[in-house]
Structures are given as structure tokens and as C-alpha cells.
Amino acid sequence: MEASDLTRPKPLLLLVYLAVEGPQHRRHLSELFWPGAAAPLASLRTALAQLKRGAPGAVEVRGGRLAAAVPSDVRAVLDVGPAAAVAWSAYRLPGAAPPTPETLERAFRLLVAGGGDHAATLRRDAAEYGLELRSAPSGAADRTDRPAPPTNLRPRATSFVGRDLELVEVARLLADPETRLVTLTGPGGVGKSSLAWAAARQELRTGTYPGGVFLASLESAPDGAVASTLAAAMGLNGVETVDELAAAIGAGRTLLVLDGCERLVGALGAVSELLAACEGLKVLATSRERLGLPGEQLFPVDGLPLPAEGEDPMRTRYLDSVRLFEQRAKRVDLGFTLDAGSLPHVAAVCRTVAGSPLGIELAAALVRLLPPAELAAELARDLDLLASADAALPDRHRSLRAAFDHSWGLLGPRERAALGALATFAGGFTREAAARVAGASLPVLAALVDKSLVSVMPGGRYETHPLVRQYAREELAKDPERDALVRRRLVTYLREVADEARAAGARRAGAGTASTPSTRTSAAPWRRRSGRATWPRP
Image (tube, helix red, strand yellow):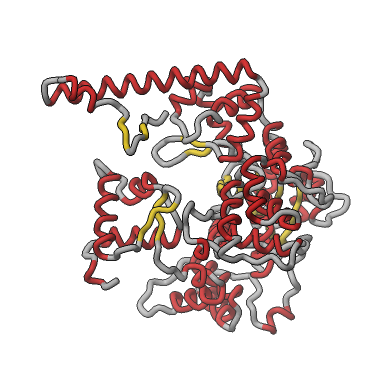
């Protein structure tokens, strides 16, 4: 693409954003790039038209989303080696303003991770600003002079796949001096624990936390024993109270990873007390709902990127979801290969489980019994096939159903009733629709959002994760009377929305020209395209 092909920056920025962030909804793009426009979707269409003329084929539609169809070296740039080189070049940029302490610290972390001698130089420069960079640089002499930070992190039995951008963003948040508590949130099986482990290992390698990097599972911790559970994870025998634990941690830079916090939401005051008492302490937590603690920074975790329907199979093989399936499949079948014959079926499996890493891993373990084509067909009929007898797995990770059973058990009666009813909306819903069909008040809807069971979409609409929706519909079906009542409410609501839209269309048509039967018909809120009716969305 020649520079002269495009005269405005917005189309190019749009293309770059799609190349970096992956496929995106049109509404999200329009509101992000044209937030103050009277018709943002129209502005998006104009930019796409300019791209089409200047760079034919650069943007395509994948699964209803817009995506860049041009090569991107984002992953290579995010690798710590090239990133370290970029950080050093940026730091030494002639004429640049003096860096802030935060910028110095971030550059130092990249240089430590990337190796070489520049980290030690940067540390000496930082001393001139009165900033002590206490992470051990990568030089051999410094590594021998400084002991490795203490840790209880154990190697994983399986490799960690993908999540490059998420790891970079988590590292950025942890490096922010104003951020003390980061909570990875998301539904069961989405990979929060794995991402937290990988982020912790990354911090351990850089030496950012001389006080240590520790992982504590709170899944089975007693309500009143948070402090003693954390102390045990840190190897502090005999420490029982928050004050004792705070004294042991001190002011040194320490990272605590708290896994599976959702069961103790409301009983985590000890965490806030520790953060207040230990100025060098940072906490990275995983939870199916926000913790509600002061200063909490939420980091939603979603499923892995998915192959689009009809996409060229050979272009999907490097997506994280497909790579994860391949690696896990090879653990049970060394002869497993991804090729033009198996890729479409592997892609279908990944879509069926909506990119859930847990679902992908459980499905991949079945290739020892079923070829990919049969596996995809069976899973389309019955997701309960996804189960494992591995005793090393936590109970909530032994099947997709167990993961959602765990989340369902954390809901109150009103939240369960609302979620079951909301599952009848296949394509998302508005707050009004949630209230009229599901009887979901704003507090109940907010609680479901906080518990990662409902997502807020651009434009103010809501949606449920496909696997959550399937589980909740099954729960609703267990009460036939309520199931029938919810469906009657849905039909009534859709009729009322259609009537209101029809009346509004007739008023608009009447304001411009005299109403005629043909005018009223054309103003109906639905129309046929290729024999298919399009109705207003609830």
C-alpha cells in the first residue's frame, strides 16, 4: 500500500488498531474512533470505504466482526528481546525530555528481561534522579551478588500458551506505582489462574520483587484464616494474625498472588490491611467476581481468540486457541498433526467451547478416542463429554459443568432466577429487556456483571458468555413453569417492541409525506432480505 493511497490518518489508525487488537465489533470501533460524532457508524463506513479504495482487501469480516487481513509483527515486537532493544533506543532518543521515574522503572524491567548490559547503565542513570532501581539486572556479576527472590511458585506440568498481550498489560499495571491490587476476573475455565501464574513467573524472572513472589490458593481457606493461609504460602510458620504477617513482610517489594478469591469475597479485609501496612506489597488476585476492596484494579479475562466461520484453515493454525489444542492433543497422541483436513474441525471445537482454555484442554484430551471430525460433531451435541478423571486437577476444573456448578453455587436465589431467564436472549439484551423479561433489577444485573456471568458491551447492551448461557438455560428448564412464564414474557416483550417501532416509523413517515398504505408498510420495523425477516433486537 503506497502512502499516497490514503490522505486521512483515521483509516490507517483503524487498520493498525485491528492488526494489534484483533477482530472487533463495528459498534465498538465506531464509538472508540468517533466518540463525539452524530453518526459514528456512518463515520466508520466512510473510513472503511477509504481503506477499500486505498488498500483493497486490508480489512475483512470474520464472524460478524471487522478484522485486519494484513501481516502484523506485533507478537515479535512484544517479545522481551526486541522490546528491550526498543526500550533502550527510546531511552537514548536524542532531544527527548527527561524520563519520569515510572518510565525509568518500566524501561529497566524490559532491559532486565531482555538481557545485555544496558540494565546496569540505566540503573546508574536512575540514581542521578534519586530513584533506586532495586531489581537485579541481567549482568552475571549482579546475579551472583544478589540472591534470587524467595518464592513458592512451582513449575507447571503443562506449557503456558499465548496471552502475550495480556501478560504485557498485567506487567504494566503491576509496574504502576498507583496500582497495588490487580484482580483478574472472568467466568470459570477462562484461564485466570494460568494467566496469574505466568505473570508471577514473569515478575520473578525480572527480579522486580526482592521480597519474593508467592502464590496462595484461597479456594478452601477458612473465612477467618486468610492471614494464616498467606503466611503458610510464604513459609512463615507460626504467623497467625495480620499484624504478625505485616511485620514479617515489612516494607520490601513483595508480590502476593491470591488464587480463587470468589468464595471469600466480603471476608478479605486482611488483604486491605496488609496493603495499607506494607508499602512495597502488591497483590495479583484471581476471582469470578470483583473483590470490592479499596484501590482494586479489575482486569477482565476472556476466552482465547477464535477462528472465524469459513476462514481459511491454514490461517487459523497460529491462533492461541488452536495452538493450545494442538499442544494438549500431542500429550495424548504424539502422532496428532494439524493439517488442512483436521484444522476446520479443531476450529469448530474451539468455537463450540467459546475459546475457554479449560474446554479446549478437556476436548484435546479426547483425541486419543475420537478423530477431530467426530469430536467436533459429538461436542456440538453434548458438552458434558468434556470431563477429566485427573486427580491432580481441582474439582472445579475437572469438567466444564463443574466449573459452572461452582459459579452457580455462589449465586443467591434472585441472581439464579435472573440469569436463567436472561439465557433466553440469544443475541444480547438491553437493561429494559432484562427487567421486563427476567425481572432483573439494576442491583441484580450489576451483581451478575460483577460475578463475570454477564458482560457489558459497547453501546450499553449486555450479553452472557455462550457457555454460561447454555448452562443457565439448562437450569431454567428444570423448572418448566418458570421456563414457560419467561418465554411468554419474551414473546410479549418482542411484540411490544415491534409495535412501538412500527408506530414510531409511521410517525416519522407521516411527518414527511402523506401516509399511504405503502408508506406504512415500508416503515415497519422489520423487512425481508433474501426471504429472511430482520426484527428489532431486544
